[in-house]
Image (tube, rainbow, N blue to C red; front, side, top):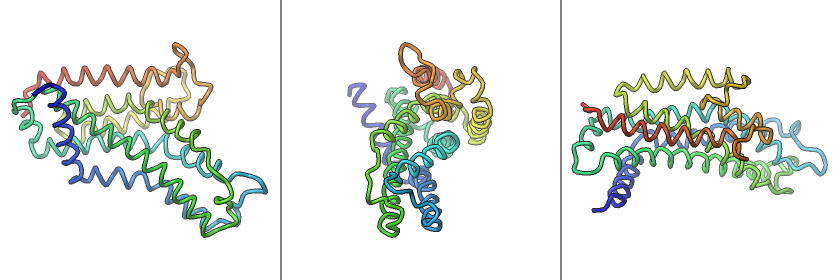
Length: 260
């Protein structure tokens, strides 16, 4: 069996296992929280939130949801989902069993990393769809909100969410390494939460461009004014480099461990 076949087979197995865990439901619940809250607020205060004549209500509606979710909730979600997915294996000594099988260890490590990335991407998709769904629902029930009279700028917000996802990769690499490295669920969770808070506090400092846990809020707050590296957003470049580095180092570290 080729290396790629091992990887694909292992990833499929991980996907099947994911459906039986709370982590699967967390991806859906997390995506619905903000859109549902905005739906309730708009439904209760629709008279006050009705846009002026000729104003596209989707702009304010979608932008506020993105700005209220990405800086704080996305990093916390990544910390939680990564810790939960790996903790299932630690708790059932599944990692020890997987590493004892006659399959490449890298297929185990990167197969699970792929599932974490898949879960995060799924949550972004669910979030975007939920925003559109609840906005359309508001337009059906409350014509004064004018949601059915205009079209949202799909590409603008897909781009914003895409930039946010790339800005999250650095956190993913770090948290995945920690979650795989430490059997105790509290260690990666605590470290992640502390770093998320530090990222929110430090994002206004120029040095925050080197701190992955600040990248999500920087991607939103700076927007087109983001410093450039090789003509590309610095957050994008540094986040990808951090992800690649921590993923490789994490695998090399875990590979040499005697996982008990």
